[in-house]
Amino acid sequence: MTALTRRERRTLDAIAARIFPATDTPGAVEVGAVDYVDRALAGAYRRLLPRYRRGLGEIERHSIETMSRSFTELVPDEQDAVLLDLEAGRLTTIRDGAELFRIIRRHVLEGVFCEPQYGGNRDLAGWRLVGFPGQQHGYANAYINKVVDIPPIAVDSTQTVES
Image (cartoon, rainbow, N blue to C red):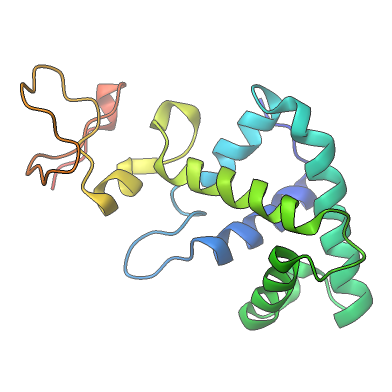
């Protein structure tokens, strides 16, 4: 189930790509972070859907009014400038912009590092990035704050990734 319209989804994809961009490793879009956010907005985060709708629309309007292009059509440096101003609360046309940015950023990062069954962290890329082995049953020693040299595994064991 999804909550966002295509247009909202494209805008959120563009924002997520700037918050956690692909480098030599997959970024937020590639690991399905926006899939996670969209599913969460249809379920557990449903109460935030109106805030997302309003905020994504305000970002689009701001981009069109100030740069004559949709946010998705801006080059990365222009998108970054909009998002930096949003994060700092400098965009007066966007109500509670700093809070909106904080919410979106938190949700995008949740999508990068979540249990894959919730729609993000495709191929366990987020976990591999930070060396988290996932839900290892029968692993006797705690692996928090320790390097563990085993491939990550998700609750759904079909998500195992070989290193």
